[in-house]
Length: 114
Length: 113
Image (cartoon, rainbow over all chains, first blue to last red; front, side):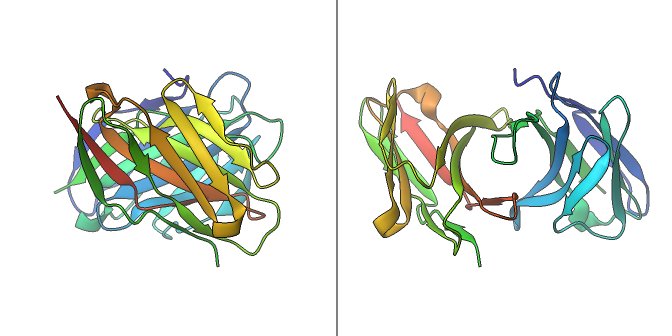
């Protein structure tokens, strides 16, 4: 158990809909990262938050947004969903001791868009 | 540009055999970190090791060992006396001055009983 909690574990929704994925980082971790894992693109970095502030953006679509709340949990919002958004979405957190520390991953949310 | 290549898409061995997973990386930075993660069939990503660019010492942890060679930009992972529970997809990743993880495509390791 990594200590990172993601909900829900599975999500099935229709095209055009909007969903919210939730992540609780490990106790004490200030950084939260979101990744997308799909069969064709592999693991892709989406976005990084540190203590409530956005630190870096990767290959995140404009239809996607995220935020980190004062209690450090984070949410990833996916809107106007398309079939191609079906993927495993991971949240990870890392210790506040530096930018080089390893990230610990949650179990992921498997999103299926039908 | 940063890049991580895991040329072996899938490896299949019989239990108790030794197996090496290759990882080759590209970066222009002199300071960077390399990581290995394991993704078992259950789907979660499990951290295995972190190694910085200034430390080329090989590391051993039980049946796992890692060989880091800057001269060939490689960070290979060897499992000795493989077990069925080692079956998983293994990812190599690079973090450089952008502080973002760049992932390899992964190697699917199948250990047959």
